[in-house]
Amino acid sequence: MKFVCYKEFEDPEEPIYPGILYKEKILPLARVVAVAEACHPRGLTVPEDLNTLISQLSTYVPAVKDLEKKKLLEQIWPEIGVTPTAPLPRPNRIIAIGRNYAEHAAEVGSEAPTEPIVFQKSSGCVIGPDQPIMLPDDVGRIDFEGELAVVIGKLGRNITEADAMGHVAGYTLMNDVTARDEQKRHIAQGLPWFMSKSYDTFGPLGPCIVTADEIKNPHNLELTLAVNGEVKQKANTSEMIFSIPKLIAYISRRITLEPGDVIITGTPPGIAPIRPGDTVEVSIPEIGTLSNPVIGEDSL
Ligand code: MG
Image 1 (cartoon, rainbow, N blue to C red):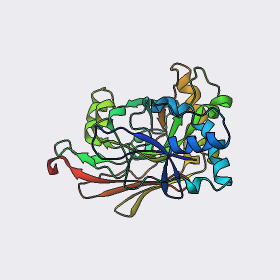
Image 2 (tube, rainbow, N blue to C red; image 1 turned 45 degrees about the vertical axis):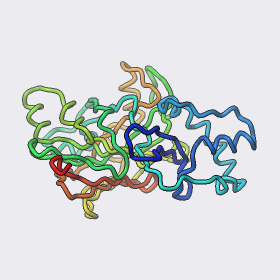
Image 3 (cartoon, rainbow, N blue to C red; image 1 turned 120 degrees about the horizontal axis):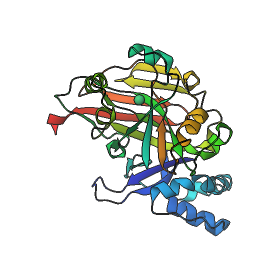
């Protein structure tokens, strides 16, 4: 099942609605749940808080599959002319992993880490598909970083590697946009990465959350990132240094993971700067393509 969020108008004050992506069409989750409950009552509801809703994603899967089998999904009126947002417009937290691909660690002049490098990226920088990444003109080099994002659906502390995948609601994509010159300057001064990772619009997320049941092996996904159609990053998630269960176990040893947390699993090699006028596309075939234009701040 592919979960999306959307707005009826682009106005930031407008409410955000959850939906299901079915044959390229957005079906409102409220309508899907109403039809599903009429056919086969399961006690499904649609909570207003999206982080809570994420904790229930797996409960919608059997109902949606049932409606698909009965050819009832096709009869649900899709939304037309709506604006997709990020599937989690304000994640509970974005827990980011640095240098989780050996060749990327090498290209930034570092050794492959022996322990996960964990940092936080502001949830406030999240934007959705097709929304512009805005570049300030006075901070030097700014890079793309295509990444697989893991969406946590179940509360847990001290989660074992064996239990870790049971805490995953699904998967999406993130472009972990980074003010590289500023990050290097901060690293040299012993300062945190938070600022250079968290500028407004530096967190494109989407286009959908694919529920965990549909991704048989998240460690065998082909990730590509293209700028203006030219492939810049191409890797398989099998190349990650620390696997998803290892990351979940490592983080949750000290920090309780909560529904709506998003773990971004690190970028493969090939990072490079982006410039106003570019279009950046992050893709994993099983998830989709996250495309964002790049604009200069002074073009606003
Ligand atoms: Mg990154």
